[in-house]
Length: 439
Ligand code: 2M8
Image 1 (cartoon, rainbow, N blue to C red):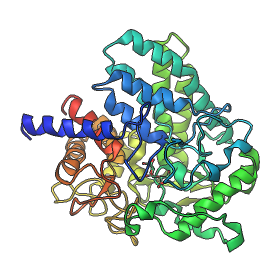
Image 2 (tube, rainbow, N blue to C red):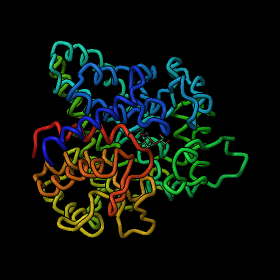
Image 3 (tube, helix red, strand yellow):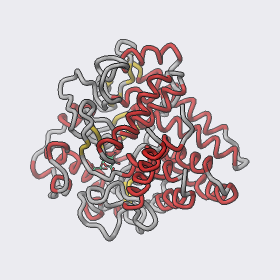
Image 4 (cartoon, rainbow, N blue to C red):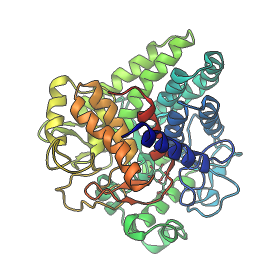
């Protein structure tokens, strides 16, 4: 890529983020996602950090305004000016919880906890370190409360692994990993609260989850508000409780970044290092499959591993969990016809095994490439010294939006974009890899 091409691409990516700016935070996409989403905002801040410190900080401080009194960081902060999204604030009924934020209104579930990592990166890139230190001091107690919430409420057996209780909490909503748990829910009409989808009038229904899945998503939300968002009661009755590889890998790295933040503030980093150690150890002991060379989620209701080959099963690389020997076993599967072989003409990394039944190059989280998963794997691969593969993943992060537009996800063979155009984290993470030093 020439310098001119590169600076044009950078300008285009910045324009996507500028277009999606809501005044104090960034929406993930112009129409499909009109509110503030939790992990999207963290990725956006990681991109912004390279050229607009103030905006990067504001993105995250705005997000934490929606934090609940018990530490829960909600997955959506609702934009009162936008109504075209299901489920909106009325559906969530979070006012039933004594802990919920009243203003802004929020959802009642969470998303992968990449926030401490984002906060640390914003500090790292800051030009004005005094301002950035004040930002760290403001967010540190909130991040601590967030991680405390996860370990206190979502890890009842103190295993070091936290559970998710809704596919939306994974961030990978329509992943095949949830299929069995969702099918297990036998629903009758009266169990599903009335609702109307908004997504399929904006993007193709071929790319999105099915109506049956949406019934289950809605049913779970009802189960939460019927129990006033009391985690003990939810845990007792919820048919969907899963220890997710991606969520816990992100948490382990975030614990480490929280430790770095604590040290910068002159506080004791030890508890955060200890949390990271316990979580990585539990990922390695409970979630690893030696036979397959990948990590599997664990279903706490069925008490079994979910043996599905998804790209986020490689996410422990990002958490630096595997030994070097285990990383070799992972590479044997990643660098194969199941995902993407080095030297073969395909973009990396498809979200689902290309040889698995149900693989689709265009259906939401069932095969297409997602830039955020690529970004996590890129960092993991680089850490383990797989530079050729890491370079290839980095190239996909750049090439796909450059050739096909700033889409939400991409076909691994054809490259074509799907879902929403002008998608924020695609732009933000492209900016991050372009503006970071070259490999
Ligand atoms: C998608 O999820 C939302 C629900 O949270 C949806 O489908 O309506 C996911 O890709 C999720 O990871 C992402 O944060 C969100 C906004 O980009 O969209």
